[in-house]
Structures are given as C-alpha cells and as structure tokens.
Image (cartoon, rainbow, N blue to C red; front, side, top):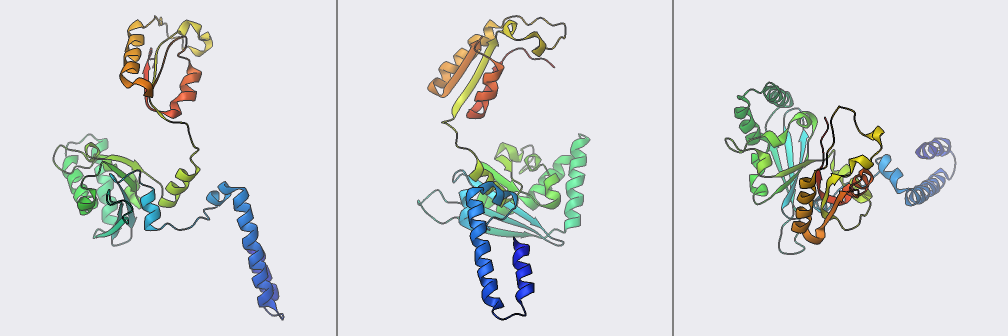
Length: 282
C-alpha cells in the first residue's frame, strides 16, 4: 500500500494537480489501513505498526503501585536506565519517570556480564564480588525508586539480555530475587500488545490440585513402561483435600478418577497455584 503512494508521487510529481491527487491517495490509503486494522487488529501488531508509548502508557503496564518498570538502553559509551513507577497515593497521581545515565562502555559491560556468567557456570564462589559490583552499577542507581517495591519488570538491551539480574546481590549473601519478583519483557511495546491481546479469562482460582489419580483407568499407552508399579496414593488424596479446605472456595481439587490429564490441561491456565500429588516418572 505504501508503495502505491510512492508510485503515485513519482508519476504525478511533474503533472498539474499532482499535490491534490497525492493528498487524495494518502487519505484513501489511511482510510484503507484504518479499516484493515479494525477488521484484523492482530495484523497491526504483527507489522509492528503501533503507536509509541507515553510515560502514562508505561505506568499502565504495571500491575500496581508496588511494581517498578526498568528499561535499559546501551550505547557505545553509556548505558541509560529508565525507571517508571506510579504512586500509591493520591489516586490519579501522575506516574514518574527517572533516567539514570550509567557511565560504563558497552565493551566493558559485555566483558563484565560474560565474566559473571562464566563464574556462575563454573560454580566459582568468586562470583559474589561481581554480583555485588554489577548490582551497584546497574540497579543501585534506582534504589530510591525501588524502595518499598516487591515487583520488578525488566526490559534489558544488548548484552544485558545475558545477565541473570536475579543473581545480583544488593549485599553479601542476599540476592535480588529475595527482594523483588522479577519478570522480563522483550520491549515496552511488545509488553503492551501482549497485555492487550491477552484473552479475557474467567475469575482465576488460587489453587488447582490433583491427587491420587486412578492410573489403572488410564490407557496403557500413556504410561511409561519402566518396570514400576503405580500403587494408590491415599496420603496424596488426603493432602490435596486438606489443601482444598485451607484455600476454601478459591480452590479446585480433583482426586481419584476425577484427576484426569485433560482437566490438568484445561484448568491449569486459570490457576495461580498448581499442585500435583501423583507418582513422578523421570
């Protein structure tokens, strides 16, 4: 479609009234594109033809005021850290964006990140010094914004995609994952479109538990032949029933013949906690 507009521009640039014809062509194209995206909204996402985010858009991606969003951008000489938070009070208060320039060159940062990963892979206890140093470089600048938060949404850039932020240490023998629940997103626009396209689900149960399934009722082709006997697990059944009583109406519990694989697949997406008290096969 855009090539059509360019062709019209080239063809009409030297003819009388070409500006009016070009403007009409552009309007026709924009109307066509609007109808196309209205009919097929997923197409706009697939083509990455989405509007840029504002600070308010970024804050809307956070689940609550206890979460913070951190976006990194690496350049040759400096890494920039963008921190978005939204205040708990007063209601309707504007979200906050703070930018921290981190004076570390891209090549130096890459060497530090890869060296840290090598220490972890080799199970070298000397990793702790670099875990604290990388925390001080990449996370500590935002300690004021992260105070009182329990969730961190990270959008890394470049070599930072190779860095396990959860293994960084704010202090000796304490990891960042102990202070913050950490999640990653490919980009802010991708995160927004993922949230938008997420299908609406029914009210989410807190617990989904399966115990002591009736394995003798399962087709023999679905059970691995390891020479093991799958005997009943009455204690597992009592365990999940007790959990069901503990969580009350926010729980769904299946035992015996009702604990079927098809139900696991159908119900698991609607539960926050999945508990399987069954035989395990490796």
